[in-house]
Image (cartoon, rainbow, N blue to C red; front, side, top):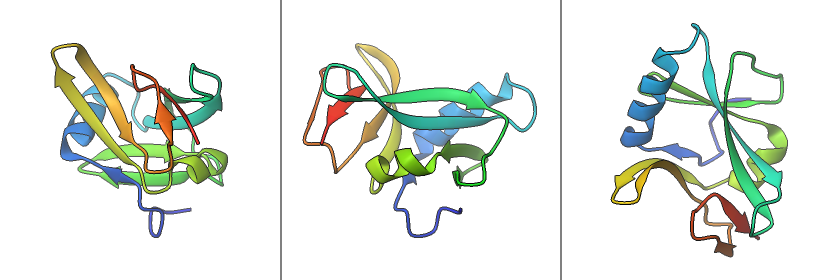
Length: 112
């Protein structure tokens, strides 16, 4: 599965940070984003390093950064933007998800 028609956007800041993280990992490593049940709002985002791409994974690439999203998680992430923010409360990946009807204060969980 490729990135066409999925509307997943990776900002330049996120691509840069992913590149920095993956530089310290074995060659071929990618960032995997998943959506799991749990969190204070019903679903939560997961971020992991993975060297294996499953047949049903979507691969999104930008500026040398590779992101994997499994088929089940993709239905909850369509139209989302992955950004990396560095502000007064710290550094983190932020997902702007147009499907989320509510999210928690830390931004790692959401509801539909």
